[in-house]
Image (cartoon, rainbow, N blue to C red):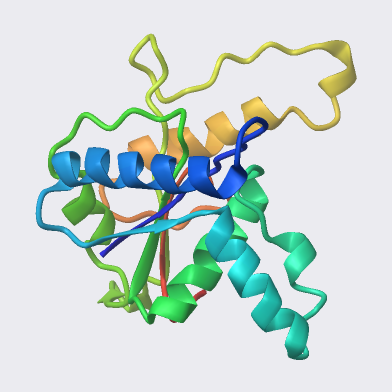
Length: 186
């Protein structure tokens, strides 16, 4: 099952009519792309319906952390949708990423929820391939980043991953836009 959170900011016209038409269009495009895989489109309408449910319960403090137009809040919403649907795993892929490997979904799902080399694999993150073909980030070192040069630290981890002979490598960082999480973790 594929759950697709969709940020549909509609500023003109009848919100629910436009949302409904857009929802239908997104469903058709996804059907053309994924074939027989069931797709759940999770839109702002679903979020509004869900907010009414949680407002009645004891989770009122959760709703401010859910949205479909902000990456951390999109991930929170995806995790809630996964819980409601009872799925085994969630895969997050940001909208600015391009996947070229036809085996991406099976690879992303591989090992999730299983033991590998004596450790449970509850989450996996991949790296991005930069336009120049490298996974290393361009290290521009402005003076104000001297104490916490994120790109340099990330590249150190990426070099360790590249040097590893293991298929899976423990890492102190994850890239949220390319992330698979098993339900034992979420």
